[in-house]
Length: 284
Image (cartoon, rainbow, N blue to C red; front, side, top):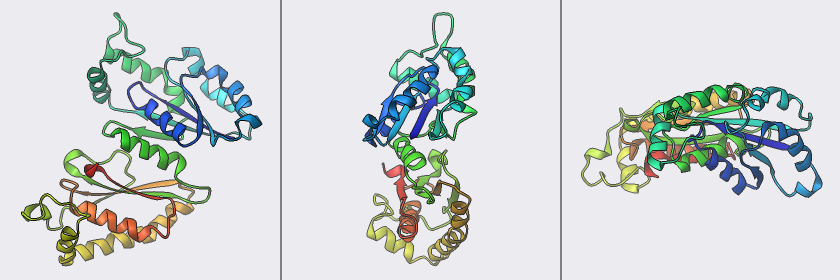
């Protein structure tokens, strides 16, 4: 049986992650008390739930604090036949405060005697037993909803047994390095199409931009260096039982150079990694 547990601080994107798993065919429950997890596993292991891909539950600070403290013991009590993974979502406190301010939602732990910032910190302490046991931890501070949904698919659903899910991502340094990047390549030394008037409003997927970049000898040299590095070392990551890998290619604005090289790498590795995905962060 496949069991996925989603947890994390309020405002980090737990509902988005759980909705993604529901769309992927999982039987999903929000705000499950930790103490009921063994009963749920027993129930969903029956034949009547056989048409579901697995079970996914959200466990968060709305639980009784004693239940949260016993999370490790409850997980250890589950049958050996249960294949469980824990995804913990988090974000910088400034990002969480901003999200609550923008949505005007009330934090589940805040009250007249506990302001928002204090409630966010208290929640971190309560969830420590889960975060310390997490299979994956995602910082969603700079992620859009679409990026989070992609990350959930890649981390939890992208790779079949014995294979590795590969995400090639382009981005712009002016918005920061993607928090889920495993390998980062800086391509800002290439000539920038942004300074060519006819190319400024186009991107690295357009033929005119590709032709401009391919006319530069440094483009071919840089692509060869990056692809040679990945050709050599990606198999080692895969052989070490790594189930996912994110390769991020960055330029200044994330419109031209990084998009071109990410797309070229995506096409290069498409035949070697069936679970390959591409994401152009600044084009979304």
